Image 1 (cartoon, helix red, strand yellow):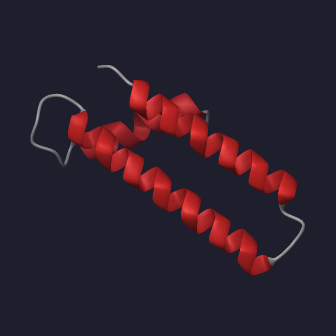
Image 2 (cartoon, helix red, strand yellow):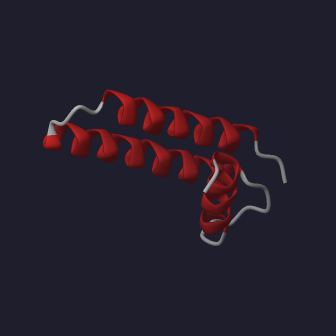
Length: 75
């Protein structure tokens, strides 16, 4: 899934559990989820202690793009 689609999907999933008509709470929840996913992914990479530089860079770039899409999401 592309970062934009991932951001929209996270916001959509959290919107069901918020009480305001705008996406402020859903966006905050989505940002927390992205932070947690990024943290867990990096922990797993460190645990396996393999040559992770390329994979780590790709994953970090993906999470940064998703985070940017969530912040700029309007709807």
